[in-house]
Amino acid sequence: MIVFSGTANETLARSICGYIGIPLGKCTIRPFPDGETFVKIEENVRGEDVFVVQPTSPPTNHHLMELFIMVDALRRASAKRITAVVPFYGYARQDRKDQPRVPITAKLVANLLVAAGTNRILTMDLHAQQIQGFFDIPVDHLYAAPVMYEYLKTLALPDLVVVSPDVGGLKMAHAYSQTLEAGLAIVAKRRKNASEVESIAVIGDVRNKNVLLVDDLTETAGTLTQAATLLRKKGAKRILACVSHAILTSVGVERLRKSAIDELITTDTVSRLAVPGVKITTLTVAGLLGEAIKRIHNNSSVNSLFEFKGGRTS
Image (spheres, rainbow, N blue to C red):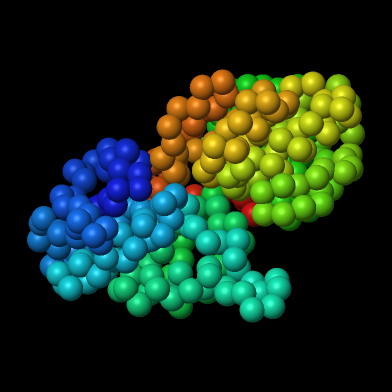
């Protein structure tokens, strides 16, 4: 097999290759003067099982187009099978028509990946699980929860309550609470617009408890910080947030600096600069993705990667 990387998160790709024990594949990626992307695969891939690591983190459209071009180059170079390893799948929130005359962009991206020549998808913590059904090719959907659990176990937090910051994340919060043998609560919220929410009530007991907020994705951190403020008012002690994909815009960073969240726990699915003034613990998913790549290449089961501590992540 050969693993290649786009420019979105080469550090993660190198860590994955380190876990597997192979060098990162050589390719040239550079912009033309007009902003178009040039890709050249610098080694023979004829008949090879190829994996392309490229999360669609900001700038999303640029990284998506780069992925399409890489897949096309590999297909035209006669690669036997091309697997797109997309640790963070962008446009996942546009998975349905929730108002008139809007696109279902998550499905459009799926179509474009297949049209480019992708034979298989490996991704992690999709915002909406039904996106797996948007593809007519195999999709391996992993979860960051096993990596998160190993870290949370070292903290040994007493009187822990897992909190979902909204109704949509209740299933994930329930899975964490079962695994951590913790309580469960939920924050009811009302969304004002795309970047602002209002937390209005807490369902469950959090007084004098350590709280773990869990979510799959944060950009502006509005949902998390509003929920943390309300939880603090309700008497929560230490507040931690556990998020698979922390994209973090400048608005999100500023909100986290001023928030009641004591620690943000996330993964390296997307590349991120250090954020002064915010305690962020970044856990690597390179081993999880590397193991999945090995099993896909060897045509063995990846089912056990969905399980931890005797349970399942979903």
